[in-house]
Amino acid sequence: MPQAQTVQIPKRLPMVAAPENRDETTAKDARIINSYIERAPDGQQYWWYRRPGLLTNLTQSGDGYGSYNWKGDIYEVFGTTLYKNGTSLGTVDGTAGVYQFTSCLGSTPRLVLGNGVKGYTYDGTTLAQITDSNFPTTFVKGWAFLDGTVYVMDSGAHIYGSDLNDPTTWNALNVLIAQIEPDAGVALTKQLVYVVALKQWTTEIFYDAGNATGSPLGTVQGAKVNWGCLSADGVQSIDDIIFWPATNRASAAAVFKLENLKATRVSTKPIERLLDNADYSNVRSWAFKHDGHRLYGLTLVNTNLTLVYDLDEDRWAQWTDVNGNYWPIASMTYTNALAHYAQHMTNGKRYAVESTVYTDDGAIFSAEIYTPLMDFGIDRKKYVNFLHLEGDKVPGSTIQVRVSDDDYQTWTNWRSFNMNQRRPTLTNLGTFYRRAWHFRHQSNTWMRARAGDWQVDLGTL
Image 1 (tube, rainbow, N blue to C red):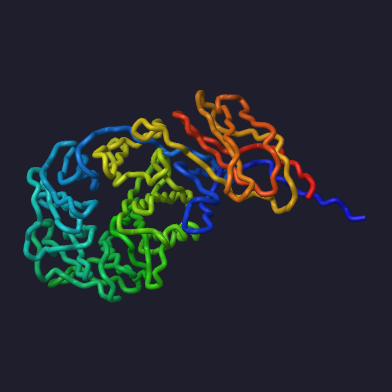
Image 2 (cartoon, one colour):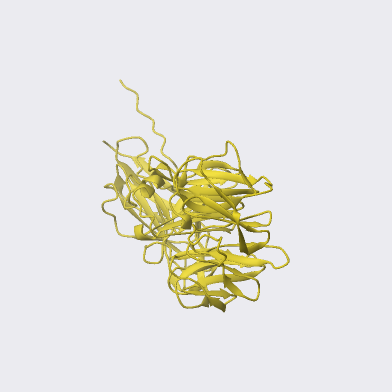
């Protein structure tokens, strides 16, 4: 007589998910929305947190085209105007999207900004276009300041250098070409004491070789990366780690980071399924720190998608606006008081990014988790008698749940946990063979949840 089979059923439903989309859409499978995950101190469990909200701080006119903290002041481009702490400094070009910024020192410190069509400097008094005849007429986005020289690159991968601490003057001899491979220039940036040229399908690294004539730069031998850049507007740096949407000669798409000159892929296979079929003609990106998390956000506007990478947890999420579309933030900057500002793409607003604000500009957004399909490795019917949700007790906070037993095609009606109760619990949650759970927090309150304790019993085949 055969012995009865013993099956171990999990006693906890973890509140954690990673993107597991099976194709190029986010319509099915596990994902986390408007949230981030944090590993608990025990190293075994995870906390689910609602992302910070946006509180209006300033209103201007025009699309948001970049922001930057220089010497403690906030500089922003809205439409065709550069502002300093909300006050207009003058007119700039508004035809090529987001500006990128740097600065230089010297007897006259200057802010430097450009959008690939025109470059400008601001010396604390005067905003002026860079008109030196040796400055490239068109250039790719991004600057690199190294040892007193400001560098910029054109699409032919020529890297031009300014005079020492003077980005208004450019020497015709201070030019070199990033030419290990014959691909076009896409973006220029800097890491540590190196100039980084992101090209069409490769990346080249340069250092200050101190050459007496021509460009001071020299190639860092052996530092070539066989991945290039899909969009200069996707390049960000946080703690001197560069992130960018990458591609190579095989036309693959990924997200890479460059840390201490070492390139590493950070995108997962599901994320790359989303990236492979995306539209890169209109890209925005940002990076900022929030409650101990370093976050890189990549928005593909025409694909209607914002992907967020948490460097410290090595996890991806999707962030949206209140209607489920991409998160419409053009750039991030900070104040000297360690507060962060987010610039909206289209409505002319600057927002304070706040942990204690649970809305975007007054509208409540949803924080959500879709779990993977669960069958616990056995093809038998399961009964869920109760589910107790463990999370912070907050008056007015509700977490809703619904389930799908047919591969994300249809969903049950929502049921709600009152998170101010001592033990928020639901009973009689039905039977299933394979089930996905969808949790949603849509209250104007704080939210942190960790796990669900439940009773799952096995039935017949």
